[in-house]
Length: 474
Image (cartoon, rainbow, N blue to C red):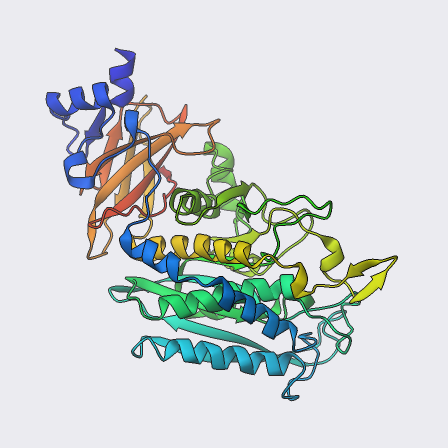
């Protein structure tokens, strides 16, 4: 009887599902509406989304040799310090900027006009200590417009500026191979591969500047999006994704870390009051995004495991996803499994027989290619699935042991329906799922006191979007 109760779901009519559907759910775990929405894992458990033939073809196109060539070319500019020369044709951040723009433009030429590349510049006023004088900061932005839902935007970036030991030294060599030519190489390679594809939603591939001096380029980009009312559904920065080798010599070539915040950076006092009253410290939009990444990017086609870290960034550190979090956008950071600080923020030198400096020879190019595949699987899955449902709420006007979820119907033309997911409050991942068809209200005969719930949309192609976590509705 307890098992039957735990699986029973009512639709928005408040009428019980058919006896046959209840029987199927209780005995096999197949959710109601499974014939319409596709198969689930055994016992009603959410299953990872397997890459289809099109995604596998995309992942096969990612070329580690091109990635290596990009990293080596960026390192060859000598320094890419934000305060270095912007006019020297062979050395400095200006030369790197122009080369990235030219390469992105070549990729855009393959898109049939759907990808546009721009140099997004502004003058940053002095911001001591790391911007002592007014400085032009330029992002290189390649935007691939979506075919059916272009208003939904997904961003991937790396930062092309670099630094040596002294954060204000703009003349000494700072090759910046791992930090962060590796992340720029991921963004540029994805722009090349996706240029010939037609995702439903918009994808943006960015190389930002000013990261080492204070996240200035990313903050400018995020602010522009917010001012324009852009619906950024996901942002990923790839920062220090170039090596699988730790400082003690051990290697972990099949794992990438993904840093995802819990309590939102942009949380207001009113939102904090609600969070404290209902829980949800582990259910921010960025945490839902991290769960989504694992569901679509841990598979044989990427060859990688995604280790989600429940922090905004590394201990007391930061990256280009933070300005997006400040604007209320879901964002997370990819970083290699273990950092080697001898090859990060160091002058190029040999000391006591040990080579220091962020040089290409310390990068693992097959590893960067696999990181690019994790990003590609994530972006393509986001851009070809419906977006997370909006205005998801739990009715609280009556004290009951049920959970009554409501949400707003999406406008995605390929929308096939919705699923309700839930888990114990002590679980990290969603453990149960049931389909509710095209309804926008579902009554679950389980207590909201004891479990966390969410709702996700399903496309006609069977792809699931990220989960939306509900807030109270009186």
